[in-house]
Length: 266
Image (cartoon, rainbow, N blue to C red; front, side, top):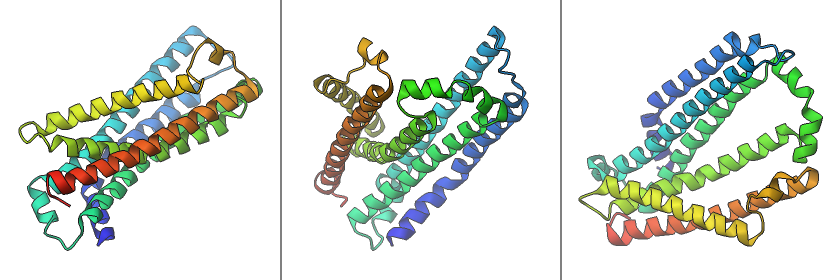
């Protein structure tokens, strides 16, 4: 039954998710064919730099919009399936409360992970042309010396970290939606407020931990090179990972408790 619930959630979200992400890939392919492949990096001019800045600024806005859309879709499916009129039907199924919750977590994570993978694929389409890779090879050694590892390794670590943190994002979204149900007259507003308050608290805790462990970005950070930069980067990821794990577990327990004890769903 858990598999059927996951399949139903994904099927409900698939049409618009696939449509928007297909449009994103189409835009990336078009940008590759009609712009990136025609660039000549042997002659770097101010118009070239400005056009690249404009392209990647627009790409950043597009990626941000896609990620926000996916998060909203995950939140909407969770709310609609468990707390709206559709939710009354969901709770009549021969499925336990924890199964409902885990089905939503798994389906939500699949959507978030697919979003990240498609976004990464679009970026790769833009930056893997022969002219771009040739230009990068000219600075690859210097960049590797600065980072302590290759740009590819850096990107892979960052991508895996984002995939792992997607679980945390899903749980935080669901936690915020559940908190919103404690305010019957302002459920949506309560959920939005809970999300932003939670995000702010997490950011404050992150800053405090970075200061405590001596990895808060500062002047010394910008002078790090090679192995020192690698150690700093890995230390930062380790602190963030532990913090995300603790917060995710706490939010899951809190959401489960509220749904079971306060709004009598589980």
